[in-house]
Length: 212
Image 1 (cartoon, one colour):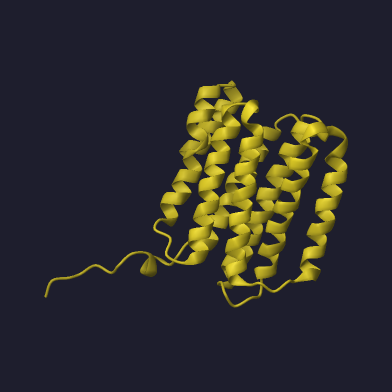
Image 2 (image 1 turned 30 degrees about the vertical axis):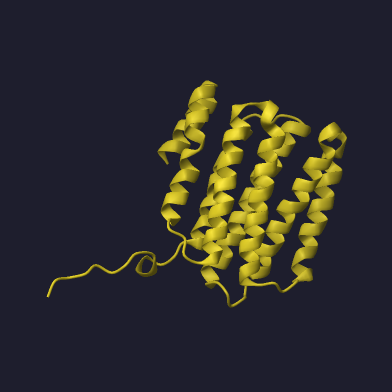
């Protein structure tokens, strides 16, 4: 909460150093909250969070590192896809169709403003839509608690909504106040994704030993 609040204060004050220093705090806290990850699903989610952390820092350093930051987030989504595939590899093509249509529609909508960024951005759109598809494919499967399946899907959708607003800001037209919505959606999405990997406390830490 404190890190997120400091970052949003930095946005309001246009304080670059405050934003750079505070932006990583929420993701670091999520990683600490999940540590140590014992199950493969949780380990892959942690890899995605680490890559997201790298992307956060790179994007905040400056526009000249935008492609590097985009690449870090792309691989974060690949890690999330890999995590979801540990739950189920069922194709679920019917669930994938809406996200395929979303990927095509988004790419067509953004295309006029992409210029030289067309290839990396459309690739990123395809990957994040795949991430949403695979999170949706988990729902109803036996490999993960049902509540966590829905939480992971909600996180994927919020993450994508955040990135969609960023794309509009960068390649269509700026929207007043969008920066606050973008970050709240991003943090909420990452929290939900991390929550889906959170192990029960009884498994995450050993029981205390009492003397006889």
